[in-house]
Amino acid sequence: MSSLGKFKKQALRMQQQMERMQTELASRTVDATSGGGAVKVTARCDGNLAAIKIDPQAVNPSDVAMLEDMILSAANQALQQAREINNSEMGKLTQGLDLSGLM
Image (cartoon, rainbow, N blue to C red):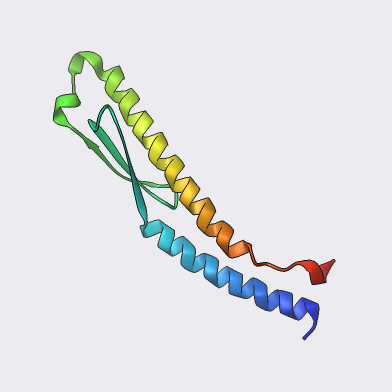
């Protein structure tokens, strides 16, 4: 089989693996908290937020800014963890790609 034929077959296999991985990552979640657990954010490893839980005792009408900061902090932590997992898993798929026959 020609180098181009091998590459096409390899690229198709990788595309199928990436599609499966993206589906898996969309269902995989990570959690992050802030404010000593007062705010919990769950993010999917496809980069979307899945849930935000707020302890009712963390809601202080006179200090909404603090609650906003806790939500933002937990959301950023969860999304960062999700990105790291996504990058790691997707990197495993491209790791074995052999481009040497194309050069």
